Image 1: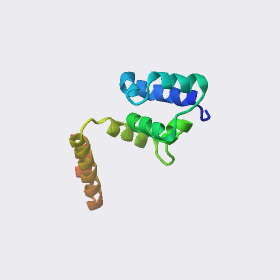
Image 2: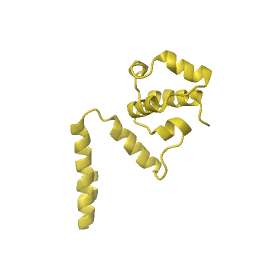
Image 3: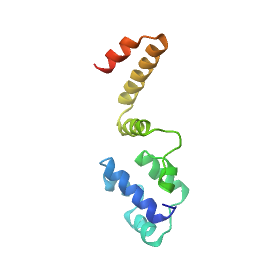
Image 4: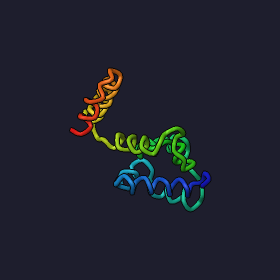
Length: 121
């Protein structure tokens, strides 16, 4: 898909549905009439609005424009990033980062047994 207002609106809708978000929350950023104009008249958003929508959805501006995810990420990494972005509070995010750092530390030490036993906990 190329870059057009209609394609951007389609991608926005997919992300909202995929993540179980509410369209009403999106309308606080972009009025529904504006989305309709993007879709029906083919005009796309300005760069600032596109950025605000990308942040709200937890996706890249590249994805909204082209439908392609950032280069270099596997599907597993994309899923992990999506899940991390869905966490509501900083405490939960900090806990996830702490677990990852612990796994990395243990891997550097060569402590394979603790890594697999932690994963099964």
